[in-house]
Image (cartoon, rainbow, N blue to C red; front, side, top):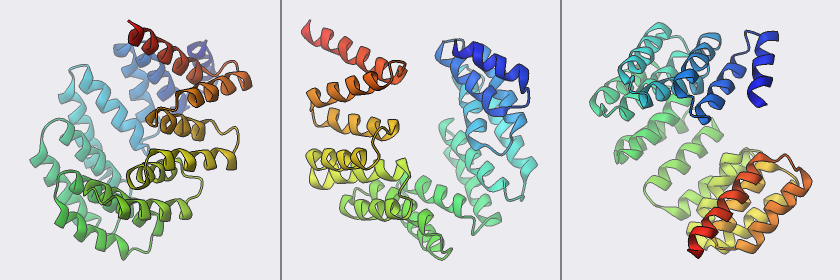
Length: 275
């Protein structure tokens, strides 16, 4: 049904990049992976500014054994955009692709060149800090953090600091940065998730559950916040409350596909555990 609706939308609005991307996702999930490549590619052609579309297309090609084709696409895209402002994050996407392909030296070369061409680009600095930290290059990450702090972009600085402190396992500092991030961007689900992760690490899983309950109470019926609550409940082994949350969602919306899948998965795991 969803595929038919998307195809109907594309007949009426054939230049809708997002619909092509969603169609690709749907085909991929239905294990029609070769067929998903074309709509993924069309999405990148119709909206070349979406890094998500570019990276999804690359990873799809990579998983189908067409990595060289995907790498050529990312390289060509970054080259075409050049020093245009959009080129900064195109370089970041290229770096991610090279890293995933097991080419760390090439990834480093592209990142160094990108930082030379875009020394004060907030998005690129944020990416580079996290990339360096993930590789254990903490001194390099700290230098970039200092550069980012000079850009007077409070949210980006909080995001990068949160990721950095997590990478070095300084959980109290990570939680402080996550709380700053959430205060600056109170509707950010990523910020809330970071707060919950940091709370669990510093104060324990029960404290994280309490914080997630507060978030749900503040914005009742918000599907994505309820998903975060379910994750914290499961991590704390509060199975009865997790079941009640799923039941409430299905009572509210009987077509809630995510809740049905969660219930089915939980039932399946229960059967396996029971032998």
